[in-house]
Image (cartoon, rainbow, N blue to C red; front, side, top):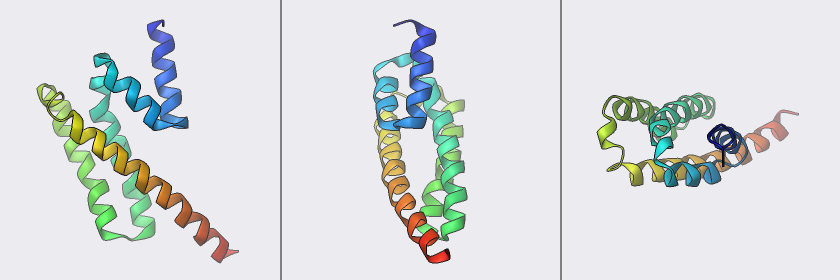
Length: 112
């Protein structure tokens, strides 16, 4: 597959179905440099959601992703050693995201 097309596919999959994008990113070492940035973005998004839901542990988990992503950006030599941790964090993000979506739908029913 052409590099530009693969980049586009990974970006589209990150929006539509993130686990498929993570599999492509882990298999191809070119995308390992993207992982710290994704940690930072996920941390910011989930921090904003956690502030809305007011869950302390969820907020702590989300905000700790940001410094971890910044650390990995500065020290890219640790990426290979921390790949399993990154995958666990993204999996937890997926599970928390699914739980958050169901919670938000319940809240919206209560409001209307």
